[in-house]
Image: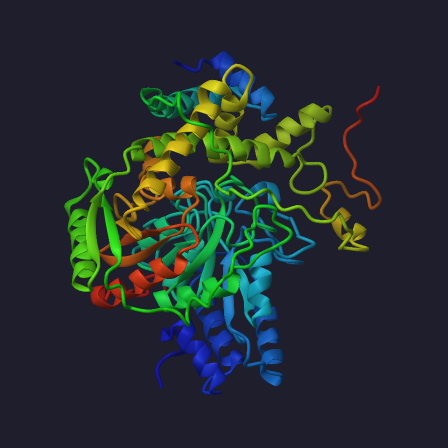
Amino acid sequence: MTIDLKTVKKISKLARISVDSEKAKKLENDLNSIFEFIEKLNQLDTSKSEPLTSVVDAKLQLRKDEIKSKNIRDQILKNSPDKNKDFFVVPKVVE
Amino acid sequence: MSNILDFTLVDLVEKIKKKDLSSKEITKAYVERSEKSKKLNTYITDDFKNALKKADNFDSKPDFNKKLPGIPIAVKDLFCTKNLRTTAGSKILENFIPTYESTVTNNIWNEGGILLGKLNCDEFAMGSSNETSFFGNVQSPVGEKLVPGGSSGGSASALRAKLTPATIGTDTGGSIRQPASFTGIVGLKPTYGSCSRYGIVAFASSLDQAGPMTQDVKDCSLLLSVISSYDNNDSTSINFKRGDYLKKLSKSIKGKKIGIPKEYRVEGMPKEIEDLWQKGITIAKEAGAEILDISLPNTNYALPAYYIVAPAEASSNLARYDGVKYGFRSKGKNLIDMYEKTRSEGFGNEVKRRIMIGTYVLSSGYYDAYYLKAQKVRRLIKNDFDEVYKKVDAILTPSTPSSAFKIGEKTNDPVSMYLNDIFTVPINLAGLPAISIPAGHDEKGYPLGLQIIGKAFDEQNILNIAYSLEEEINFKNKIDDWWM
């Protein structure tokens, strides 16, 4: 199986990473060599194997949904890439 | 009096408790040497000023009941540290200041440890040479222009260069053990669920584990006892009884059954590594262990399965970096354009490559062929281990198929870079603990490590075996401070 440029473009769209033509060409090469390596898995019969999602047998631990950190609004907003002090700001989405 | 920097972590704790040394003296020694070692590029962010202040505070009101009383420690920059920049080696987190502390680092500070600073690593822990960091590559103290391994390359380098008496890294596919092997130090990846993942920048959540990187096995046991804890904030944390690994450390391995898997004898492996392995086997035998030939038949499929599972989880984990709430943002014509440009400019090539692999294997029409297939292979790999552990107590292998390489040597060929982790990846897939200890050199004088793999939650056993081997191996590798 090979990954063509069109597929690279499609994956980059899905991954929300813009890729210019030069980078796409390089990615096409890299991904093909990686997938050639990955294809080795097809030699293995897995028809009798159940997928393993987690090595932890136990049920996931649940805890009460409690507020532990208080009054950190300003601190959190400080990490925002936009300088606005009250909200997270994004480019306009509604015309 | 010997130099402060020559003491192990356990020695330093002892010296502080006996009041032979103060926290300030120790911290100052490490800060001064770190200042003189900038050429190695091990630190992304230092916290030296605060560290010295904290050392003073400790000395004025010392608590000698702590496990790490007044001991300065630098950590991989993948652990969130409250109010101190945490970058994960990425441009996208260049200015990120966490509002909370990771559980593992918190455990260290609670036991009296003092943060020295944040150590360089491959971007989002994706790499085997520390060359993918946005903050530049790290050089190994072992040799100029030599990679320290990765992704915990800054940690390995800083420890080996004596810029910190001990450190912690994270290991998703070998990121503690491979750099430990390359730089001649001890590194342990605990059983999945031992150390909390809370506050560690996520790469592949079903594989990530934090672990100690230290000068010797005793130090490793001490630091593991500090960082291993059950944590409500990590839903995969496991509530099992954790022992005092240092107190129970023993060289007696008489009657232990150690397996030697034939599949780890790979084509093209240098003779020195084969010899080293043989040496390890002989030493274990002489110490009274029983050596058994075993087979882990699906070993060959571990790496390709890993390169589906890990990127798939990474593509999902890294979806959060969108330039909205924190991190780097690029300007865009509209929201989607902003996302796409932010991620394109904020992530480096290796990270983007892995997000793309992950996105592809999870995408409609390919999920069954790749992701589901890899999960089934993962089951077979775990079954291999379950099967041999009915007969043996631990497994001995080389840590890596080669010694350290030069910076730039493998950057153009991702698959050859991935092959570095061929001996370490199966252990993460199966969630097992494993330790790498320095065991010898190749012909160029570069360190080589041996890996001891244990049963789940059987850290004490692999530490004991490592402790027994360590004494006999008596590893010596002089660092000539070439960077100073």
